[in-house]
Image 1 (cartoon, rainbow, N blue to C red):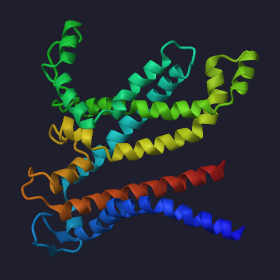
Image 2 (cartoon, helix red, strand yellow):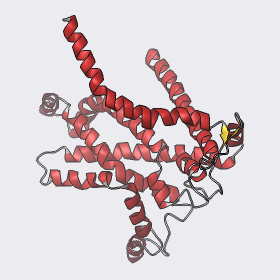
Image 3 (cartoon, rainbow, N blue to C red):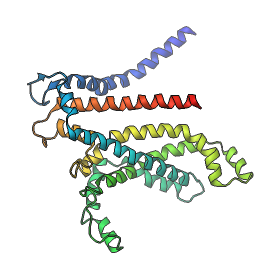
Image 4 (cartoon, rainbow, N blue to C red):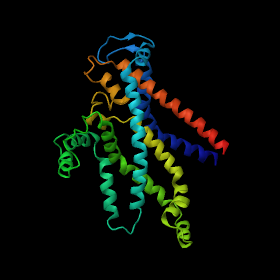
Length: 299
């Protein structure tokens, strides 16, 4: 038995080895290297590297634009995650009905944005949401607007518009998660509740919701992590503008690390920004975990 267990363990490690190797090369090493780069004054494209210690972090702490991007990252997450969770759950409840005609077609339609490249969606949305785009044309014809609005270039609407597009793009993936969770709810309990006279809201609140809540917590964590590192859609649609209203930490890092917008790239400084933001998220998660544990014990 011990020999068989040892053989199984060896084969498990053999199959895991390629994944571990690629993770170490493309995830692990860049993370470790970022700690080193954060201590350098380095453009990333020259041989001149100057060790500056924690100077990049001190400069970062004094940069109002970084704190604006830091705030916007959490505003973006706070605006998109609840909409994404609630909207996808409602969609999943509607499409979980197998008696609905064309249910597979509707599921496919809502999932298409997920597999569509974010940059393509961003470019299309720039056209649709522009001052002369189809959306303004429709709203003007319906007399819902008096004049065209450039939804992505107007500081009042840019963040909200970006959030709506982000939620629409990722709705399909959350829908699949929720559909999977709904399949795990015991059908006999739902049927028994209906026989006893419970209506749909009651069945959902007392039977369905408690069963899908643990999976919902995992979905929420995945959505929060994805929203905080959102980049491609925002970069394509607004580039962090207008007037840095949609600038998040990801676009801030890109601007300093790879763009010529700020002059010569500063890979060391942008690495410090990434590390600072990562530790801030870890700290917030730890505080949340502690308070959640205290609430559970209090109950």
